Length: 332
Image (cartoon, rainbow, N blue to C red):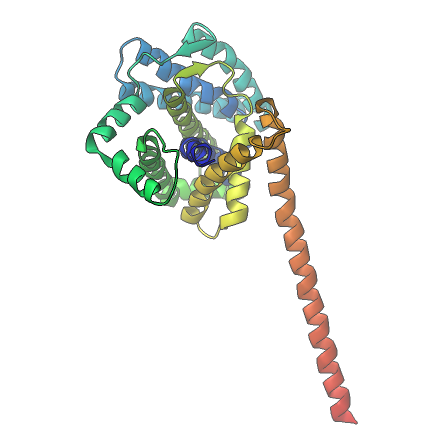
């Protein structure tokens, strides 16, 4: 059980980067961008093929981010300059990326088990520090029998994800970031202030898909392979992470919301891992589990809000009846 949850936290932290990208388009820009399913694979494919061809894993990961940024910008151009519906422009780019990704990778699957990846470099550096023995010693003291192989991925993933989160928070507080947020809220209003909404949408989609591609690149290097079908359903996973995070942790500020998205991504992976341990569920049921989680995340907060509103109205009626009863007694 512990190893299963530990692995879920590892992958959840990396998938949180993708969830941040989805948050930027769906919540900030109010743009239903389905490019995510393609740009995730683009990031994985570019990083994998560059690593295989001898490039530094860091350069390969940066190359993946650039490729994702370009893919997002193309989606933005299709919408803003081509006047194509937002949903359709994302679908068109997602379809196009399937062929582009196959061209980049050369074949449907690229193994990385024998290559020097960024995750392997981080793990080797971490193991030389001796922290694994320290943390596993704490677990042994607490009575945990099965120890994780290394803690490197969790700590490295936290550092990378929180750096991305802080950079995104700061960006959304800049003049361009505030204009981006205003574009999502009211495009006509921000245009009246002479803001170039086309440019803002293109940049926003580029940054979003850059984060998605970064997640794909790290997942490929963590899992040891890049596959053409690994991006299927990523948009649903991203939305699930955003919805769960917002429902559990709130959305009072941008910094709190981005933190909630990260928490939502981790919780989503843990819930999926626990669900798969149920006897009658299989690995092939993962998409069904995802759909059920998203459905519950959408329905439960609304049901709770409705119940709270009913209780509030009941309290008001009770207070009103008491006050009216007191006035009658005073009159008599």
